[in-house]
Length: 292
Image (cartoon, rainbow, N blue to C red):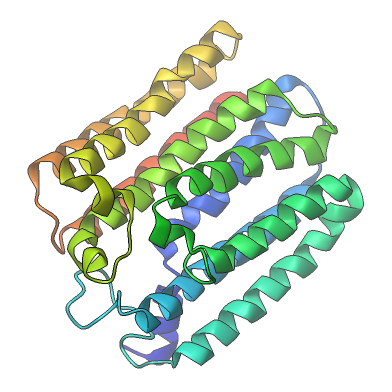
């Protein structure tokens, strides 16, 4: 595998739906409400979101290696620090550069949204580092799940809706929770796969704290709650979005069945892709439902 390809894979493309979906669905919601949306907001929000997501993944790559969570025995995909492709300092340097670019992309958004967007942007960049690094790493304390729901769901969607409308809307909160739950399903699958290795280095994910059974039920909850919440869209009059997004339900059923019937192993790398597919397809179907 070439070095460039390895670095690109270290960006963890399967997880980048977490950056894409909130921006698209939030913008579509603005249109569905009947308000105008700004293409520049969508462009800069997408750019900043992708850069923050990739930066977070790289920080995780370097820090997990330093803390011994990533070794030659790991069953997940190759990590460039553990594989010796780049040093931990080089990976952290690349992450810092990408997060700096994210800040630059956020400047036009700050100019439009003001202090609120500054607070959300700075918190997002800070948490990219604090996810696995710093004195209180979220992933090692077992609270990363809540922050994924908040930052890759609620704040991401509500932020882009606010930038377009100047308002904080209940509709954006509901949509943000739906997208955040599916984004967290990716994390849960990842944590269940890595449970045994994480336990050895005291990385107290929820899968480590409460066991395999809890982790499986958490994945099921994260997969199916967004579909239950479609009732909100139905009763609010967004019936096309409520119905069309149900076509993603078989993906949730398949993923849940797989994690309930398969012990954590390298096959979970495939399940991670299924979780990303669920997140993407559900989000895109909602987006199309809001547009039409």
